[in-house]
Amino acid sequence: MSKEVRVCLVTGTRGAGKSTLIEHALKECRGIRPVAVRADLRVPGKLEDELTAICEEGRADYILLEADADCDQERLVETTAMVCEINSEDGIPMKLDNVVAVVDCAEAYRAFREGRKLNRAPLDGPDTEYEVIGQLEMCSTVVFNKAEMLSDEELDELIATARLLQADAAMAVAENGAVDAAEILMTDRFDREHIMRGAGWVNVLQNPEPVPEDDEEYGLMTFLYVRRQPFDHEKLVEMCDMWPHSVIRMKGMVWYSNEPDMSFMLEQAGRAITESPSGKFLAAAPVETQLELLGKYPEIRKIWDRKYKDRMIKLAFIGKNTDIELLTMRLDACLGDLPDRES
Image: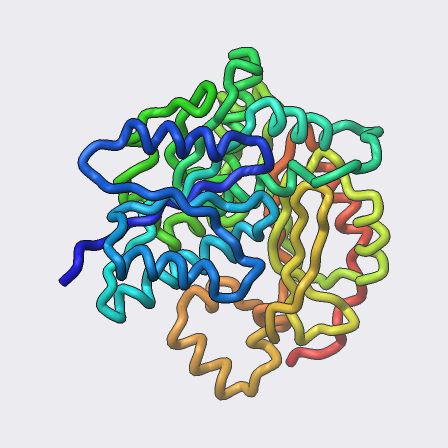
């Protein structure tokens, strides 16, 4: 059986320092044969073929995969993990070892700060806040690069913000891409389920506890909004056009008065607000199916309402200096009429 090849996926915005970090890791690594590869998802199958070829030809036992700044973060992580799993099943042992988010400290701090301004300027270029949030939520290691560009207090605030967005990632501070190779290579840190559980919005949904006292000095907050009443879609769209700049991240489940059987995923990161259908509520299923699944999954019973079953709004918020009372009032003003039925 051939030796297992491990992969470290390195992500980051344009100019964050991915290449420099990889170059440093290549110089510092000992006892392994590494190779650096650029991730390209634009050509279907190209990434899969390239990773597989390296393993089959025995050219390396560790691959440092540099993500293109324009790649979709979640898709790239999922694609890389899938290639490793499929090849391993086919007798070519591969493992996604680490997903490293390289964060340009000055750029990220500025993006988060600008997003909080009441009268922020129109977006000119990429939505850096959105990109950094996507990186953080899908990583197992964060490297804060160019830390010398921030004061100690600013760096502490940026790290505290990152921990709210991804609680379970290892974090390291680097200058000019220099970080201990042990933080990058042979870490065994990547675990898809662990990463998903560590995402800040998931933590808020499952454990709506206040932020640590140390984070309160930066104005950071979390908030869980739960209602059994549906939103009026038109009213919510109007609110989204004037979305509070103090909200850094929001994600969760909603339902609408005009489509009471369908649940939707609503989310906001940076300046982007999106909505997508996520399937029908169990409440829309036949009674026999409801009873069967309630017996099989006790967690559903915990949220079950006598009249509206599992229909609900449940949104997780992460913000900075957010007026929770005002936010709640604005959300409540978007609520619509309750459906006049029990099924």
